[in-house]
Length: 388
Picture 1 (cartoon, one colour):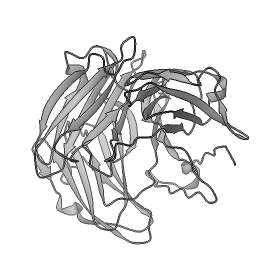
Picture 2 (cartoon, helix red, strand yellow):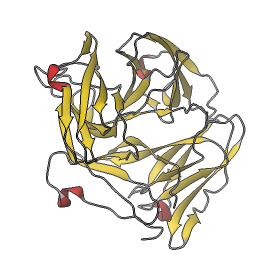
Picture 3 (tube, one colour):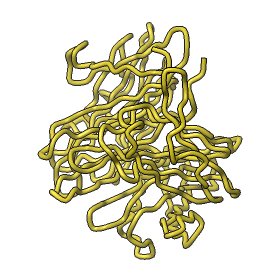
């Protein structure tokens, strides 16, 4: 319906452990996200990720974890009428692994193929860090990941898209350091040359000034390797929320993923994994973002918003009514100081379960905190607004 949303229960439509879904919107524009639910000791866990609108011949995953009983599945989806052929490589501490079984691997038309990254004899079992490169030698496809773990470091299931490109800068709006959280960033360099990467963390102080007391860490990432930065191990980084950016002067050569685990008061661990937002060559960034559906329950600090510009901006929240956008009372023309971040509560009745539009007079990034069991997972909002 106009200015409304629909939900499709994939389980009710198609049976299978993993099912790839294509959504085609006829007669207008829209935005689509995926929600995956899984059982947890404190209710239903939830992992949310925006869907992709483009196929690519190259995909990269910087974050990987196959220790003990952890499972990491690579999801190769071919929504086209032609067969796709791919080569898959794993980047581990002991070097790059190119299993012959995944060299020239066919993905049939209108199908999804699943690769167990940690399978014995053909994968990367027992790796605390493993990156993945997928290159199509014929055709183009979509690549995602499903990761499940339940140990002293991680918990739950996280579904996310791979990155279809390399960039020289990757942004993260949300992050946290503290006794009830663990956070690491994985940097993949799938090129022929070593690169130097600078990680800059911006603690969220009282003024939420992104530029205040920035903490930097510089690492070298060898060719075809993955390097890891543990935010909790940075002594200079204060406890609490922060944002981060990873950059290199060695060209568009890296992909950066974040694995963020939050621990609830009852001890439930919820791990969410996602790539950062890459900086475009032209420096442009979205001025509007959309949350396809707000939380079903009130969430304080439900949105984390960063101003990428060095001038003050205004930001407003709206929902969709029968005739279009309707401003959220008390959340219009909020001041977003230069190079800073704010958090916004999602507690008003009109935003619960409804699409939420975040619009600004300048460039911004928006992450959301999604209720999962009795904790929270993190997910990006969807960049841009629907067009006709």
